[in-house]
Length: 367
Ligand code: FUB
Image (tube, rainbow, N blue to C red; front, side, top):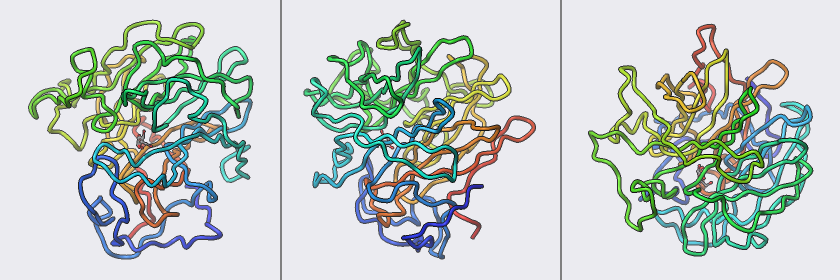
């Protein structure tokens, strides 16, 4: 595990402290203890924030040119009142970070994309991801358009650090949030995306946008995330988005009522020993979990928990390999003392067992 000590902030938090602002899509004040930390004893964080001068979240990490680049959200306190739809997550730009190796110095490359430069954007720049092809770097980002509907945009740069120039329109047929782009061994790229509740995925179940939320009944298959292969130029979908099927141990789709396992947001894909690992947040049960399949489209069969709940409401991650080691990037709210929309990115080592299963990470040292 990466156990770097924080210089400026105490590494110990009282897990029962009152959360100062409730999370996106979370209707009431909570204490950390009610979010899965489950104790009022002092608990020590497993790892320390990578960035301390601004708030950062949703870290999408990649190895480009032998370095680790991180593409996080840039959390701010915009003064927007908390709302069940997550309006108070009102982010307005992105910074890109890099480091030669985990544990090394973290470089802030400054503002890589600003919402004012995206002609179609309305508000809320949420979790981005990046990809590289033929000397061009692509930043994929969700933002609400001027009608307040989440769409996914793409911006390009000749450098992994940006600045990125956005395309004039969102990606055709894109919707919802949390794009994650996976490059397969054959050179094809796939975008996984979607998030329910504030992420609006449940408003697209008919194939087009409806203002009303519509969830399948508790005993029906849950709203599933989406996947689409990207076009050669990386600027559009090469096909209509399809459901990513997430199955239980009996080969049946995970159900709406199964909130401990069904999809909420924050998709990520990595490959290990020729298997495709689809990991995601269960959202309101606050875990990062994973399912395994044989190809980029799935289906993926549920396996277990990657990361237990962190301090804060949201849980969001990425997984990369660097120099033979695997790392889990994630966030919590250590720096803000539990303010749900003021988060900080972190990293720790991730281990696959010999049978391919993932060792669950606890965001705290043992009780
Ligand atoms: O950062 C805003 C949203 O919170 C992200 O898009 C979600 O994944 C959650 O982390």
